[in-house]
Length: 119
Image 1 (cartoon, rainbow, N blue to C red):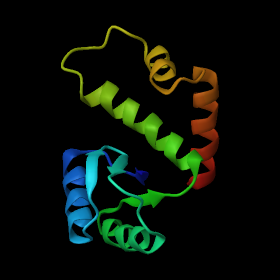
Image 2: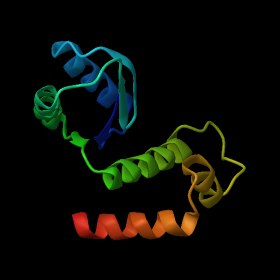
Image 3: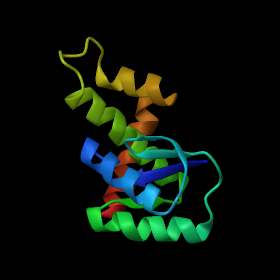
Image 4: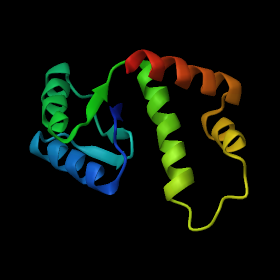
């Protein structure tokens, strides 16, 4: 099962989420920035418990697909800016479109609309 997490931006966030999952005995396949892959489905009760724990670190589980897409966009941005040892040879708009399989105009407008309504 794939679970999306809002505001995961660094290795410390991943570590905190991994510890919360272990505390709740939720078996995982992997924990990446913005998403968790679990071995089995996670009950709504366990999701609520997990959400309660990770909120202490400013993180939050995402229930809507729109929130998941926003986090995927953020993850690509973080990787583009902070994870490359040298300046990427590709424009961000092209990279984002390729990684998320959407037109850049759609992604940019979507991100602007959602973020403008959330703040």
